[in-house]
Length: 90
Image (tube, rainbow, N blue to C red):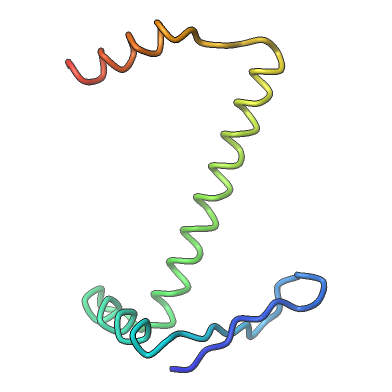
């Protein structure tokens, strides 16, 4: 499974994007796909999709945090310590 990943010049998504894996990576992907009961192509698609979703969630959280900081909404260190302590003692 020789795949190539290449962005077009304007970095837009192009149908038929390919990814090159090393033989070792191909073996790992195939093994994991088999264990998951799917094919390598679907496994890679699912992994990339989850990554992109998580990246979008992370960036949205960073934006919310920056907006809160810009509004002067901070949590003091003592409050953070108390929250962490409560998390680990419950």
